Length: 277
Image (tube, rainbow, N blue to C red; front, top):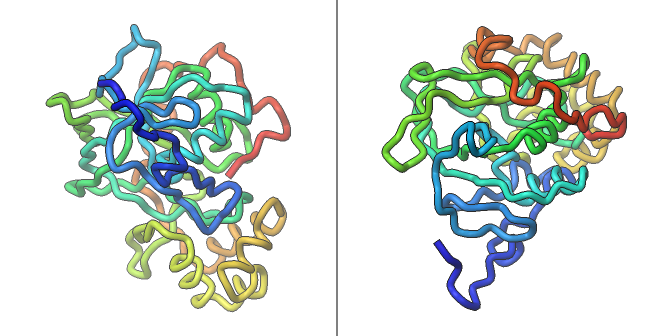
């Protein structure tokens, strides 16, 4: 599918250029309305919905800001990677979007997948090559002992992913939080509201100890959390101490699934300055 002559497909023109890593209250960033090919600073029409091993790409479910083209471009540019990324809007059954039980050094409280049988969500599948996957792994802390996420394979039919071409994927990767997720007060995982301001406002309102650490407003929270590892770690421990944490229901998939497609490849996270959420 070609781009009509004169059509401005830049991320800025499409309203997709925001980067939550630079402006935490933007998290999870703007998601596209439809599938597209992220090519540098542009989101182009996508001609295919499914790739395979011959293409050298694997499917990765984007739960939070990885579905934001501005955030994705920022992560890849950090390692000088400019190769295109197919982003396929898909119907996903069996997952919901929860709230990670950790405070990110990027200054926000991120999203994390939770098992939710029967729940249907519209999510993006990123078809990543080995180099791109290694970058996203590094950004999520997967290769690091103190990282926040594990990359897991979610097989069908446990999680049903329909990319819109009539097919069902045999499975897809997702990033599961090692700390668990926050619950809604009943013990069930709470749903991420899709915006930082209301989430942080509610979290601060519910804990005097959290306010003492991070301030009384979302702006103070983001400013204090940003790049302060010790403070973020203290906030993460506080979630557990105040018994706000529950399991995501996806922990059983850690360490299972197909062979790691990044095995033997370049590991950007070897750079000690690589940012981690």
